[in-house]
View 1 (tube, one colour):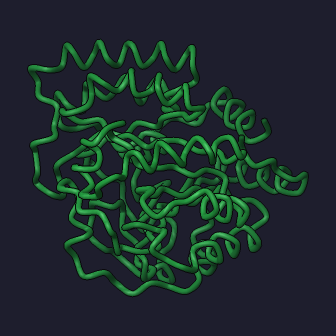
View 2: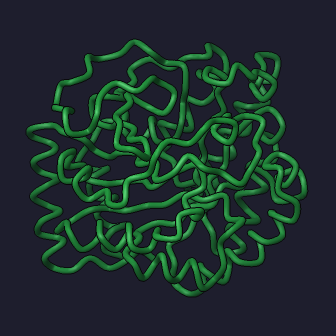
Length: 323
């Protein structure tokens, strides 16, 4: 279940949200707390790179950028022993801030998950692309899937707002509806993102044009599951654009750099994870980035930021926060 907001958080959050709607700013930031990783995914190159330095405290970064929400990512965030302290610092220093974390789950235990939750998380997500040994192979971590399936329901039952983050690609897209159903049976919702090969130049996981009819059937089924199960968590708009992305290898209208940005472990700013470093956070300013015509991904985070903020969406987000 979501963390209950205090009255003060609701008031400050309402003000910040109104300011965002009327004056603009950052809806969220992806904050990489490390680029170190214990997985060896063939669709990601972080584990091959020399990791940069890591800041001891990201409070000054968030204070400078003033986002509504922060997503803590990696690398693998749980490789940082001070992760609970980082989360607690963010929770204690801002009157309202939505804090989420994504992990590959290999280092997660019930005790660690509850520690992170108590430190101030609002959402905990575990990367899961399959519910069998294919996920182990894809991540290069033997026994990973069984470990996740064992620990995740325990955390969900203990009150942690937990979801599985699934990357839709050629090898799994036909199975995604069944994965959503099985996860619902465990009390876990699924958030979908889509694979893209732009940064790594690995097109082997792209869904081909000859598969688009099957993909459209899958999307139709997922929309019905969203209606009946509340999962996947993505918007209908996001789901409907997935076939467009795989057909055209592009979706226009990206708002990266405008209402969301990427922050590296050492405090550098990027338009998004796939773009180069642009500036140190201390030198960032609003309107630093010009609008982009890049459309080479359809990540879930991009879709969320790009979706128009309507009154209906605001009400639904408020219901989630207050339930």
